Image (cartoon, rainbow, N blue to C red; front, side, top):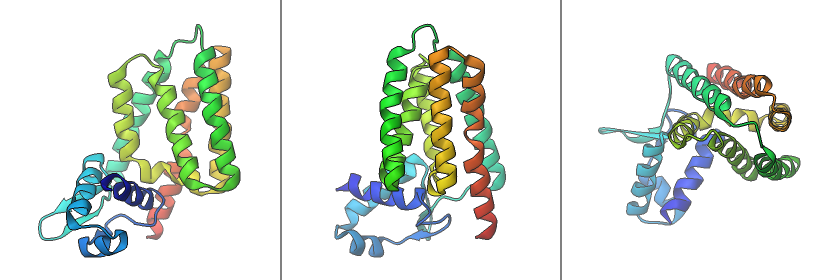
Length: 209
């Protein structure tokens, strides 16, 4: 049950139902999910480990907030890491990788058409995880995933806005085509630029909160 509670709260954080600095009160959560405090605390511990939640003395748990400078630093790291991974992906024989990405992309498009945000998010996560796992360095791929999770509430803005989601989908297609053609320059460029629209949308929303 802990995993289900953590997943539900993660979804609420990622898609803005729970906003930065919002408190996560144990009594409210036990009532919402119909579980004991132990399950809630275990779920919050897991979300803290993943970077979605912070716990502070005498204040309890709250949705993590990043400062503008922290967001800039996080995205600097993502840019560096993802560029390096794109530079390392072997382009000599990409047929298997392309096939796997196309299968994920088909799920992404179908979910996007249905406006099924849970499935859109899952397919988007799978696309990027599959792409960067192909870099051949498991530690680089793991580090990219860590920063991906830390910025989940930011890059989800590319999925919430229909026009940004369509743009993201088109950029996935461009990445696949670059892999198919062995076009590393385009692959690297799109992998890095792909992050920008969501970041800009999040920063714009942050100014309104």
